[in-house]
Image 1 (cartoon, rainbow, N blue to C red):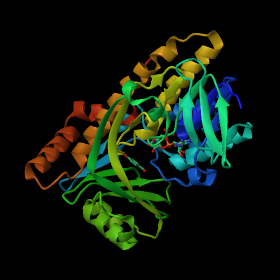
Image 2: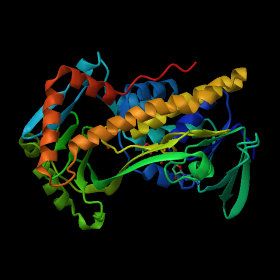
Image 3: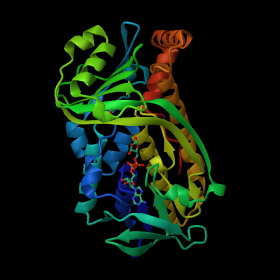
Image 4: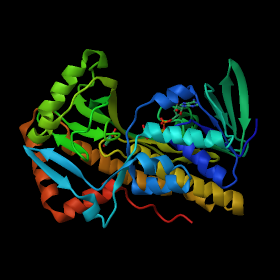
Length: 393
Ligand code: APR
Ligand code: PHB
């Protein structure tokens, strides 16, 4: 098989890239290790920055998001018995975020690609990539027990943290930066009305908690948990009890509980691989970087990589210009590092790292400063709604 852009991975990065390229007349094939049902069953975060929302609309996949998504103009920070509102709308001159689950977005993208006759090979793991440094890129993949090959001009490595794209670059040509946090997030999805109209991030002496949602009738809650916890030891009741203990009184009283639709534990990690381009192999999304979920930047960073990568490929095919491809890695990484910094800072301020009273007091002082200072609130709000894209034309 031959295509212009061979895409490994049908997460949001691979699907959105394929969709934008299609709209510009560029052909792609997606190879996905898992089945379509598996991809559609994954529960991930659900907060879209303004620029991600704009991109989805421009890519003709914003219709259901605009109908069903919830526009949020702020969120609350709870700490020390207080609940303070960060008015993103006010402090950014009118920006906000859209609450719309990544699962729904993935479904919209798959449906759009299928309607346009896209080739998405499911249960087709890429097992090797070669030729990307000498102008003959090739992806070897497996399908139904057979080895097949996909010849292409470019390989987009959109295969997440555990994919083969980054590993194919070779250890000598890549530099990796990593921090693993000493706790996880235990999340529940349940068909109960959310405790508040917008999100609440809570710093509590028992550990972090987050109240999020997918709709007016479906809630997503998280509590900081032990890294060694097994999800099987957590009953629904134990989860709701622990969440209630960590919420501010007013929210705890309004908490409606119900059976889980899903419960899982996510580890927290900050990770960046440099560079993001190796000849004709270009990494995007989780394949190149991971952030802890505090602030929900993962999907949004994937979208900003896809923004730069699609621009670079469109300009290449239209004008045979390679300058944007040459700048792809540097341009992405400037924005990536700022989001990695923000997610690390927000995580550090909100979680329990140990029993040291000094650390707890410092977190409370930071939260008190943040919510009391216009400059600090503005910095928080502009990072949360998403930093602007660099010009890349
Ligand atoms: N061959 C084919 N597909 C592969 C391979 C492989 N060797 N290895 C991994 N994949 C697939 C995975 O099964 C997955 O469907 O690549 C896809 C990667 O998707 P994601 O992990 O969702 O990564 P990405 O598309 O970059 O999405 C950005 O941001 O907040 C985070 O977790 C959030 O998934 C989201 C991510
Ligand atoms: C979610 O709804 O899953 C979510 C929201 C905000 C975050 C992380 C996750 O910061």
